[in-house]
Length: 554
Image 1 (spheres, rainbow, N blue to C red):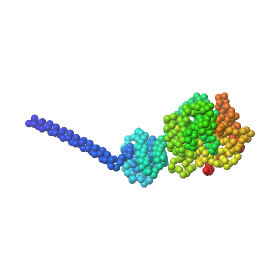
Image 2 (image 1 turned 135 degrees about the vertical axis):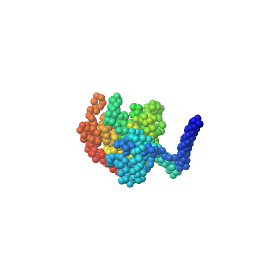
Image 3 (image 1 turned 180 degrees about the horizontal axis):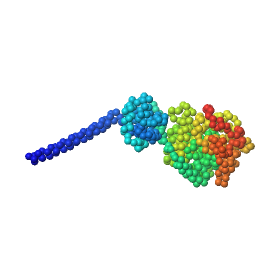
Image 4 (image 1 turned 60 degrees about the vertical axis):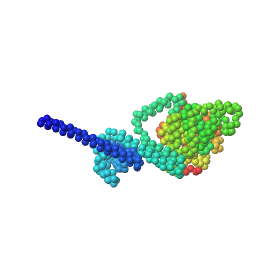
């Protein structure tokens, strides 16, 4: 009897274990089936209604909860996320309320955020006070808040890329749209998205000083004593110390003053003598025309003979011999007409990566086309282009020289027809954005054959440095050889009277003050203090130097 009872008991235990295993297996199968059904449902939704944009609602809740949970946690988020970075409208409104509290320097927690949303009348729209409180329960700490924020920003960028791609697709299917407008829209949209998500980092003084010392040490090793890209004209480089990185240099003049000849002369000096890669955007002349002018300048053969090809035997030898200097020069020419700012930027970045260009030249600024949204307003269009060029110079960390036209004010003014800053055409933003503004002035062109001291002005080409953000303003005298469209050093002197002497090392004895603060102590000599050799009463007035340009006639 006892044996029977034991057998019955053990049998009952075995049956119980068996049914428990069966129940667990059934439950697991049910969960698996449920997950499969959920996956199939999502796949069905995606196939039937389209794909779901990249997002992570749980991570958004964690980020919002961490901001309200720990004081100061928002500091790591504000530099990364904007309200648009959040996927749902409720989360965007909560984040906007947090931004409002931060800007008002109010504490940020579940109570203040709830109160702010109630004031805005959006509390119930985001889920009420209960939902706000529940956000803080989903996070333990804000230890990984910055990392989580970057994940959300990546999701946002992916959504924006999808949106841009969809708009491009729609525009491409519309036969009424011009393909160039579609390309410009595509490029602008991508660049705007990229620029909006690239933020410069704050640097400590210690790191900046180390970088500055390294640049000074590098400059000290150069035999020419320059810190920037040499122009090839010693008299000019003594003032600028070479064209500096990230500087926007505007060279302006009336037609036929020699703007293109001047930058071609510099480009030749930079690429042939100093092996600095130079990229020229020629919006007015074709690449072949530009190279023909370089050949005329280099070989000293007449432009007529170069165009017609009617050369004597010795001239063919002269051509073949001297043109070899240009063949291996790292000079790149882009002759795209009416190039847009966005196309300019993309080409410059590509050339910087491929050839490490050290200088960009644009001939000339007013021939560029601005974004479609500002077309029709010439002043705003030129302002946008000018600001974009300055930003590009900083981004590439190379000097950009942009040629510019002057208004007819220089002609109607009379006298010595000397240009001034308020003669810059179309927009005052050119003067504001530029680090250096130079004018090219040839007195002989206006029939002025002698200066105030009786010296001949034949062949004189003055480079008037009217604005120099980091140095002195003065006049640099160069020799313009019209028959070869070439600028050379001035034989007798490089500068107008008042130039400080050089020491044994070729450096100026005196230190120049900034033209933006000429009255500061120790500003150095004033190059306009002596009488202007062509009249005009010395230095321009403060109004002339910084006035807003008048409307330029066409």
